[in-house]
Length: 330
Image (cartoon, rainbow, N blue to C red; front, side):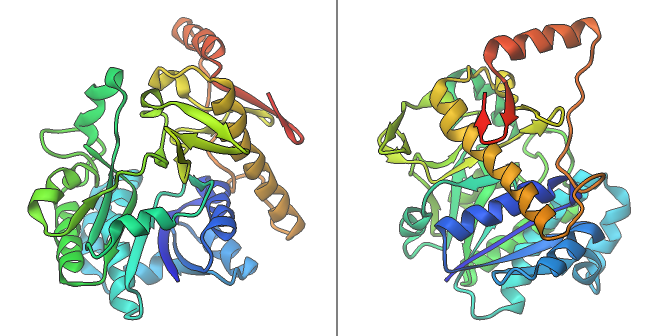
């Protein structure tokens, strides 16, 4: 059994459920705990009654946790979300003693194949973390952390729990949404984990956490329909900053990471994700759930000021925009 947890609010409902659907296809059997960051998400998940999903209401999660209640009023919404990450993982481990290894997932991940190779790399270690692996032109972004919080696995042993307690205390102390020396949100605290804690495995599989910031490092190819990353299968992609612009127009924001949208990226990675997002929307509609209004994923606004026009032209040249036309993506 694979054990995962994540959190999201209404803005990420479609992305979060698309992550879930990709786990159904690639990671069975599994259980997924979802911390619902607003009541709309909790009501949707309760209505869907997904057999693998355990929804947790935010109010229920916060109840009795005086430390979280104390810091919540002092933080912006996104800073509080960051603060919750280690508390969620630790709280689930304490409540469910049958868990041997639990993995936190960002809601904007999507699985293309079985995550088994990641757990094989974990072996008998207590913690698995993944480097950002920034492309050379993006190394300046290491101020936000050497490692990415998108996937982190913890074994339910003394080392895993010690790390989680330490991380939770750090996030309670400070979890700002700006880079400062030695810290950024919940993420930069990971920088010294391989030295600070025993049995920390830094994942080597190149197909895990492929993302806009590291695409420039790799040779991508198709092998019988499967995307390979330097000859290793793509396990999951991190669709950071993928946003809707209009009803059928989406922005990959690849231009922000100095990546041109090559055919394999556009059709076989982003195109697959976009089709699955649309399928999730149709699934919810058929299930009688209204996804208009607040329950959607974030729409990005485009400024028509001079700088906005320059950014727009850059996006067009770089191929950052995608258009969804039924089953087709262009």
